[in-house]
Image 1 (cartoon, rainbow, N blue to C red):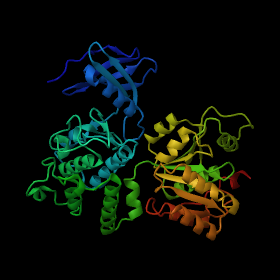
Image 2: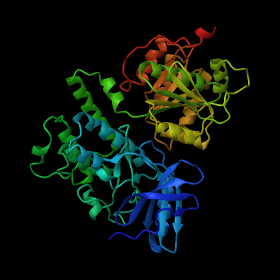
Image 3: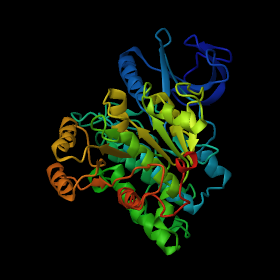
Image 4: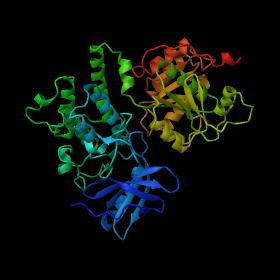
Length: 496
């Protein structure tokens, strides 16, 4: 039974958001489009839900958790309001333009192009991996076609966090059993507590739904016969494993499924004569490279510039972001590029050098906005500071790069940083040591028990292509970018 709404056209929520129209309704909630009275022209989605006094504290806690999330495939939750007299609570979030995956499937009569299946799965897995690796992990619990929005740019966005919850290791079962029949894992009906593997089951149901033209979302006898013939058959065992009844029989993490699908995608690309690296770029989405210096003067900005121009030569749409509101390096560079007098900063914080978009003195909000754009790579220059904001962006990045001194007497600085952050997963980290010896690298790899330690060669001009530097970066980004070559950049030479 649908709950009556407290809102109508013209209603104002939180003294700021004016209701424009209804976007959708469910059993316990309504979603509206609202205009922002403080930011003319800005539109938001406002979700109204009913929560009794006994669960209001839980709802408040979950709202705080959702507001802390930041991912390009999740709408930002920007505000939360309560109305105790009616029991209504309101979440204000990004308004996502587009249609639901269910509507898209109906529009194509149950058909989604087969070449989009794996890229779609990898996009969903990207956001699930982000949610599941939060502390504590966030379990989505309602992955289904109506909760996935397809934007005009063919990007997939997860919407409706109505029943998401933080995983609590001490519980044997969920307090509330919720989910959508046909897409929810068996444990959501009382067989146990939901965890990351529950979302992976729902992903399997979603993939089966796509592969059977919307006919099936549960694995039953003979379902293989309804899977479209043109689809790569190696997807069947992946889907089958995702849909195992017992969580311990499924894939155990989103990262594990990503690895399996990419191996499958590699196989499919090779069969079609397509470069594996080219294929990986198509479904990687926006990837973030974060460059953090262990201490001042180790070359973090120099390395960030070199990496950005390397990626621009290999791919396209690269942004280099100076994540520090008081940093001066990019301001000086912009003066050179635009020919303005020293100390006379441009009003625009964005400028371009040979295809790389530089963003100077940015904030975290700017980064979130850029993630929703069309960049293939965003490189964050974090400098040597380790304040909470920059450290969190480093830990969240797809490719975290630590730059430390290659000098013998300072190499322990890197080991010290690793120890100080040992409570955080470090398997994705890459360590870069300018001008270090091979013996130094060997010892550091052994001490850190980590093989991603690289020597950066002498590279005086980070805007220019350098064969030795390219070889190192080819190894660092192996399997991620296409192996193409572009013209040599001559930014500084043109200005000498």
